[in-house]
Structures are given as C-alpha cells and as structure tokens.
Amino acid sequence: MKPMIRLAGILILAAIAVAPASAAPQMQGGDVMQSRVKAALNEMVQDVKAAPAPAEKRRILEKFLGKIETRSKWAQSLPFVDDENREMLAQLHDRFATHRAELMGTSGGAPVTDAALDAYASFLQQDMEQAEASWGNGGIYLSTGAVIIVLLIIILVT
Amino acid sequence: MTRGRRNSCLARLATLSLAGVAWLFAACAQTHPPGVDEEPRAPTDSTQPSLRVIYLIHGDGDYAWHDSSGMKHLADRDALRQALAASGRTHGESFVFHLKSQTPLFGKASDGTWYHYRDGKILGQGRYAAKPGDSALSAEARVLRRLGGDVEGPRVLLAWFGHEIPLQEAAYGEGTFGVPSFARGLSRLQPRVDASKPYALLVLSACYGGNPATIRALAPLAGRIVASPAYLHLSHLDISAFGDSLASDPSEEAVARLTDTVAARSFARLTALARTEVTVATYDAARVTSFLSTTTEATGSGVRTRASAVRGWADCAEVAPGFDSGLAAQGTRLLYRPPEFGAGKDRARRSAWQCART
Image (cartoon, rainbow over all chains, first blue to last red; front, side, top):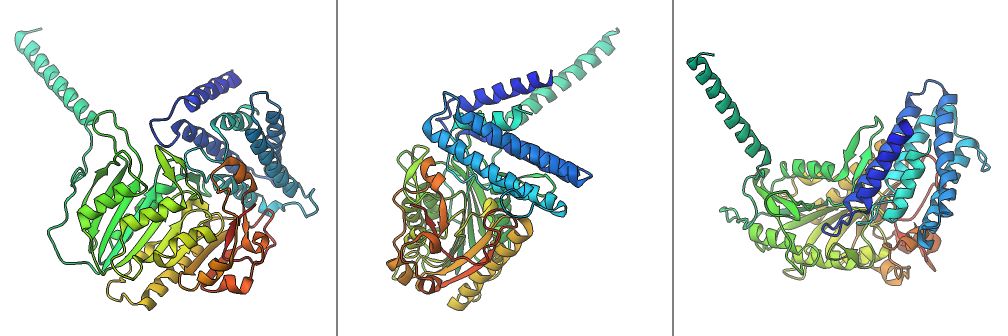
C-alpha cells in the first residue's frame, strides 16, 4: 500500500511539474519538486543524526548514496532522456559515486570516521542544497523532466 | 419550541451567519500594508539624508534550505528580515525591495514589495509592478525615484541577495537577466550625478560573484565590492553592519572599515553554519583594474546553460591563462576556509577570483 501512495504522490508532483508555468517567471512546479528533493535529503540527514550507533549511521548514508548512484546510472538509459539531461545525470552519478567512495574510503583516502558521520551527512545536504544556483529552471541544473527522474530516484525507490 | 425561543435561535443563527460572512470576507480580503504602492509618495521631510542604503532581495524560485536541526528556512525571507532589521537601525534612508511576484486570487498582480525607512523609522511599504518592456530593476528604480528622488551627495550602499547571476544575458521571465543588465539596472537605480561612482559599497550575496567579468562590469559603479568567488551557501552574506552609523562618518576610511566588517561577519556566520567551502572576498575597485585589464577568462559560454554548468567554475589560478597571483591579490582581501569533506578539503589556499571553465 505504501509504495502505491508514494507512487500517487509522485504522479501528482509530476503533473504539477509539467504543468505550464509560463505566466510566472519562476517554475512553480519545479519549486515543488525541489522542495520535495530537499525534504528527502533532510529526512536522510536527520535519520543519520538520530541513529544511535555509527554502524547504523554508515548504513543509512551508504544506502542513500548507493541508491542515487545506481539509479542515476539507470536513468541515463531511459529512452526519453535527451543528451543534455543524460550528461547531467552522468554528472550526478559521478558526484555521488565520489561521495560514496569518500565515505567508504575506497578512493585512496581513509574512510570518514565514525565521529564525523553526522557532519558528513550535513556536508552532503549543504552540497546539494547549494548546488541550486540557477534562474527559473529549478535547481541542480536539470530540466523539469530530469528533476522528475531525480525525484523518482530519491523518493520512489527505497 | 416557543415563539420567543425560536426567535432567539433565529437571531443567534443570523448573528452566526453574519459573523461567518464577515469572516469569509475578511479571510478573502487582500491585505493592504500601509502606504500601499500604486503611487508611492516621497516623505514630506525634504532634508537630504547623508546615507542611502538599498537592499535588493530576489525571491522568485526556491530558496529553501535546512539547518543542522533539520528546520526548513527560506533564504530570501531570512535576507528580508536581516535587511529590515538593519534598516531599523540605520541613521539615513533605507529602501528594501523584495523581488517576488505575487498573483493573488483577487486584486492586482505585483512583482515585488518595497519598504522605505528613514532614520530607523518605517515610512511606508507597498507592492509594485513592472511595466511591459521594463529592463532589469526599472520598476525598482521608478519606486525609488518616486520615494526618494534623485538625491545628490549621500553615500550609497547596496546589497543584492539572490542566485548566481549569469555572465551573459539569459532568458528570464519575459525578458533577460545577466551581469550586463544587472549593471545597467544598478546605474538606473542610482544614476551617476558627478565624476564619483554612484555606490560606495556593493555587497553581492550570490554564488560566484567574485569573478573577473562581474567585477569588471560593476567596478565602474562602486568603490568597493564584497562578493564570494566560490559558491556561497544560502546566499547569506551578513549586512548587519549596514545598520551601524556611517552617516556620521562618511569618509573613505569608514567605508573601508565597513567593507571589512561585512566580510568578517559574513565569514564568521558561514563558517559556523556550513561544512562546505566558505569564501568571502573584498575588492577595491580602483586597485583591481590592473588584474582585470590583463586577465582573459572564459565568459563566452556564460553560466546559464546546463551544458556550461557541467563544466562549472574553478579558481582562476587553475584555469586562467597566464594567471599572475601577485597582480591578482592587489586590491583584494580573501577570507577562505576549505570544505571539511570532498575534493577541496586539503586545499589550503586559493585566489580571490573565480573563472568559468572553458
């Protein structure tokens, strides 16, 4: 039941996002999407901070990063994704793969220490939130269609 | 039911209905702040203020962020609160513009809200609308002209809060926006009245404002500029020092001190808040010209397109051909802390300039 409710939510959000927004300079549907993405990020960060043990914190972070990494790669193969958005998704994939490698210490450096896991979660959140720096097209430099995909990646797939 | 009781019930029902209708009208009514727009009037006090402060806060788009406790904030609302608080402490004249479109169910659509203060007291506030064909900041310039007139002689400070400003003009709403139109808009807002620059200090609270193209465009307008060459988390430069009295001491030294204070407070706030890179720089417009005249940086692609966003930005020291670090440091002061994690965490130094990658 829960996945169905979540799917319904996604479809509603998607409908809002693709609705014409030419009357206003900003894309309000895109704003709704961004808010949902940021809320999902925030939930993850709060889950990490609330987890009692480092192993649990690490598990939440790894799952979150791994999910985005895997799904952004998968999304690149979707037939309706154009080249520009495919490039964006590749960028997103690389970014999260780098974060995950840093967390696990598989990129040559030491893994993030147990004591720094809460801080690392906040860093990821700030890194994503400040990536929004565009005018009118809805943050993280993705078009509305791609934002929907990102939402699917982050929210729908658990 | 007796007749008297029935009448009492009917009276009560009528009262409730009237109250309901009144509530409905009250709930639907457009709230009109005092001194509402249309034709904002200048205050009757004709004395010329010696200090004018202008705040421009962009509010379209999503400015949401979360603090360490998970609480959601809207960066433009935070900036508005900061500007209004500073205006309430400023000895001089302050104008705050919140550039945020509203399309109410009833009433007129608007493109922003203005607030006018003098000597710490609010004189009025209201909404304003752009006209067809307006360029960047034309509507704000009209309001300012109507309220404050063409004041000659005061020190003028301006703070801009918003997203990254594209290096080249990019489609925005029904027009375009970019560094060139932003610079023209600032000229419109505070025209040059003599050989001196219209602004003593510009604070650019936006990502990647400290790039050669932007500073080159703004340097003719301002004596000093505070900006971030890197991304600026939440667009949160601290302008609380604008409320400190500059009116009593409008000297160049006082402006220089104010510039340093804005940068230092901004840096302190951001380092306490963020775990990402924090970079705040000051630029003395007269002293950075040598660097700007000899630097060739990539601006052709601008920053607006998604393709160029992939390429992104980098420290000019890494990507500008023939970068001269000594020349680049002239007239600048940099406050920098590397990120706690990520690729740049081990980079102890950087320049005060950011360039678009080619």
